[in-house]
Length: 212
Image (tube, rainbow, N blue to C red; front, side):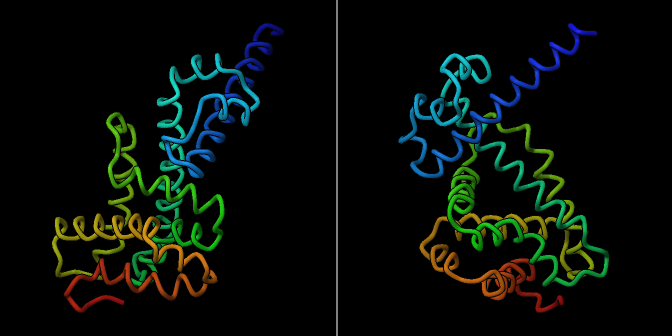
């Protein structure tokens, strides 16, 4: 019993160290990019030692990849949660708002939240090898979007809807990195939604001229 409790405590402490290293890495990556981050800076910020990086991740690159992957996973989870909450009668505007919600919140929050989102967007445009673990989440996010898009766009086949969904995701990534994203970050949450949601809805709608 006592030994099991000690084992659990060590496991929890190890997880805290791992989480702390990922958080520190992501914060520094958002500030400087992958070329400007050192192992010592990450461990100092996380209050850990260099050996902990080797133990939990194996290398600085593996730690950085894991940190960005974790942030991307959180983004996808938030997007899927928003899409899952929509009913079958959701309008195209509501679908676009749910799909773009995590990015809009990052623009509205600014600061570290937006910096992290820009890091995720940069990698999302050109994902590194080894991220197949997230394939299932990308697929689910796409299925969730299709479920609520199909009633709004009944004349569009599934392959075309998937293409439009991928274009909408690419648009959001581009906005996070482009100068216009800096302009959006100066607006209120209401202004961001008013500006961005019709654009994302337009990407979904294409040239069909239908939808809500």
